[in-house]
Length: 178
Image (cartoon, rainbow, N blue to C red; front, side):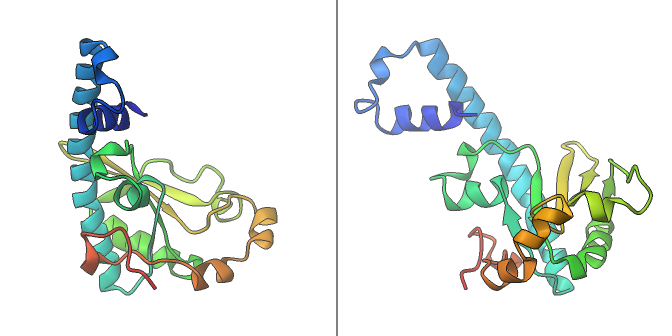
């Protein structure tokens, strides 16, 4: 997961990182990986923007998690953070509504609940996939931790009071700052 950043650093500051000492074939494989990641992320971010817009239409607050946030906020270019899926957090009280809205965008659950009506107690997200030429996987989280014991230690109310929400209207940035 570091080939993209290694390529970026060697390309942008070859003398500082002594690019001349690197095997050209390795450097080229990193360049290829960076290109693949950049294209894949562009597709994922296009899908993300559509989901954020759909959730904004029903006024569901959303927090971007993991790669979806880091690629735009920490990395110098979104294509430098490899992502396999999109992770979103919504308030538990709005989860069912958010799930229905995401499904209306063509996403289907692909890890159906194994224990009838126990997922809400034992799990922390739904796994969804949107079929197409480039399948998109989305995890819709209702909490950051999976077990009830941890949920009591980190109250969700505190988190929602201190979070930076993702806003579909601000697609060029990772999140709207509060």
